[in-house]
Amino acid sequence: MAPIFKADDSFDRSLFKGASCAFGVFDGVHCGHRFLLSCAQQTAAENGGRSIALTFDIDPDEMFNADRLRKLMSNDERLEMLTQTGVDAVVALPFTKDFAASSPEEFLDRTFGGHVPAHLHVGSDFRFGAKAAGTVPDLKAWANSHGMVVDAHDLKSEDGAPITATRIRKLLAAGEIVKANHLLGRPYFMTGIVKPGRGEGADMGIRTANLVVGDQLRPLGDGVYAAYADVEGKRYKAAVNVGIAASFADRAIATCEVHILDFDGDIYDQYMKVEFIEWLRPMRKFDDIQELIATIQGNIDWVRKNL
Ligand SMILES: Cc1cc2nc3c(=O)[nH]c(=O)nc-3n(C[C@H](O)[C@H](O)[C@H](O)COP(=O)(O)O)c2cc1C
Ligand SMILES: Nc1ncnc2c1ncn2[C@@H]1O[C@H](COP(=O)(O)OP(=O)(O)O)[C@@H](O)[C@H]1O
Image (cartoon, rainbow, N blue to C red; front, side, top):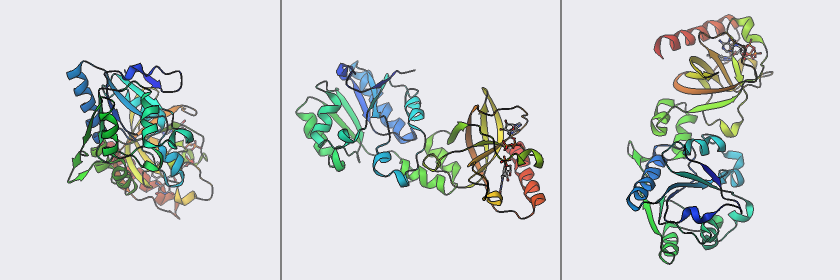
């Protein structure tokens, strides 16, 4: 697995010399990102240099659009997944207010610190520097005078439209999990530590392991889904309610309630990963608890038969 370098003041930027970098935020590490990263691997192989995923430690939108941000994964998960894409190294630039305020030219000077890569691969919509003022032609002009080749790639498309994190977030918000997973090239997942809920699941005969996932990390629309849950190193089928349970909205705080099929352990305070596979139905408010139980049992049966 590739090492992760945090590009703070102590970082030795000579790592960039002769390298092929793909530059982006890479939220979701989706198929479009993987294509760009494979381009860096290809020119690295041709030139005998390293391939590097060049990114930021946080998503810049956390600084500028925090209220409406819906990330596809946490920053740690993003960096970790980048290490598994086949690149030789992952470099995370600290995205501070000061760094974000750099002019486009200053931004590039500070990023590379005099050690310019051989190749830089970006998407054709790449913008950089304060107020995203730097464009691909600006990048190419800087590269020309610094001996770097810039490859600005058309965004990889699927079903007639570019694959972008925004497009995937919109599909997830609409519960279109199959289409979102297709563009991600993997199942969309949520992760967290299992917390105690209201204790009503056991009374209903349907235990649920609860995650409290904040809005920023919950682009997936409310609803009931078929999923897989990874707990204690094992993978189980699961029926999952996403969103605050409408029938208990006055007292519920969990936003991802996971009934794990054929499982009967205590996993409070344990890490759990939930991979979403199919949308089953909208979440709804039930006035009759027996009807709620029967409906959930129907969802569990569906998961058992179809996943
Ligand atoms: C597959 C599944 C579907 C669910 N669907 C709904 C629903 O449509 N409406 C609702 O209010 N709660 C729904 N729930 C949530 C249950 O009401 C909740 O798990 C139960 O109240 C237990 O809560 P507790 O874990 O906090 O004890 C669903 C739960 C599961 C596992
Ligand atoms: N099949 C299962 N699916 C989910 N959690 C289970 C299962 N079996 C046992 N558990 C355990 O039970 C807990 C959920 O029990 P529950 O009665 O729903 O209480 P609460 O919602 O208050 O945590 C889970 O956090 C987990 O530790």
